[in-house]
Structures are given as C-alpha cells and as structure tokens.
Length: 125
Image (cartoon, rainbow, N blue to C red; front, side):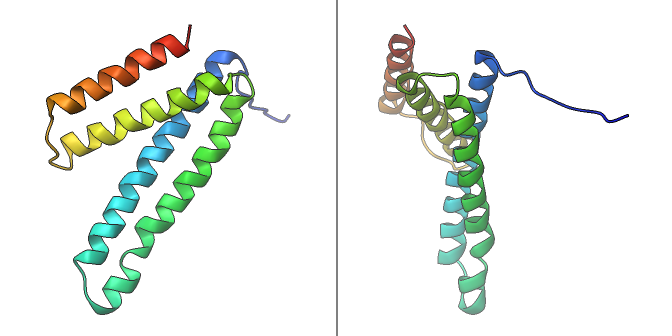
C-alpha cells in the first residue's frame, strides 16, 4: 500500500502559495542585509567567506519564492497577485526592521503602509 499526499488546488491555496512566496522574499532580503553587515564588520578570510552563507540563503529563498509564486499564478490574476505579494513582502520587511533592526516607526512609514493596504483593497475589487 502506497500513501499519496496531495494538496488542495483551489484559489485559497493559491493565496497560501502567494503568502509563502512573499515570506521567501522577506527571508531573502533579511539574509542579504545580514550578509552585507557581516562583510562590513569582518576582516580577511572572514570578509570573503563569512558573508557567503547569508547570500546562499538569499539565493535559495528567492528561488523557492519564484516557484511558489508560479504556483500561485495558476489560479490568481497577475494584476492582483503581484501587488499583493509585494505588499506582504513590504509589510514583512518593515516589521523586521522595526522589531529586530531598530528602525524607527515614523508617520510617513505608517501612512505609506496604509496607502499600500488601501491600494490592494481596491485592486481586489
């Protein structure tokens, strides 16, 4: 007896793939930031090789995100999927910056986030 596993393939699942794709983009962006920080703060051999792991993680995350985005596009319209993925990615990167990167919360950033959310709402109609 062979066990088979399959995931549901409806529109809701496409939103799940899209959210995972955005998460991969956030992971890749954070890994690039870590790699750049490591390269600036190390010397000699560490400067060359110490930053490779974060960059490899970033490449892998971008590649995985690409595949997940392709899965999402099977059921979602491009004009909705891309802005939604970018909005989720922006929210994730901003949240990372605020909670882990000691970045300031400014009124301009809050207004920008609200405008993105409003734009996504109108695109989904």
